[in-house]
Length: 111
Image 1 (cartoon, rainbow, N blue to C red):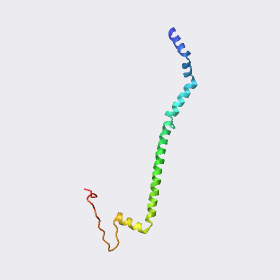
Image 2 (cartoon, one colour):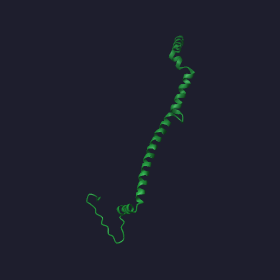
Image 3 (tube, rainbow, N blue to C red):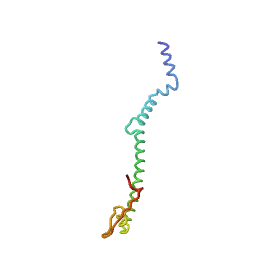
Image 4 (tube, one colour):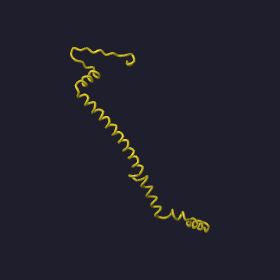
């Protein structure tokens, strides 16, 4: 028993053990671990949210570019000639008394 007590005293006299067994160091360490990993507002949670925010910003930018492109298309369709050309090309519309012939090439026919 005497050797065990001397062994414990030897360990406690070590400067590193004294430092790391200090109450304030232990509490600070536990606090840091808690805030970084365990808490509901942890660093891991915030980093995940930041990555989602970046993805949403990229998606927003792409959608804004599509809106600009669609707005330009709508402005182009306000011109009657372009409107008529669009209707003829996409929906195969025709004027009265007019015939439309649709030409299909072998390459464009799906089997």
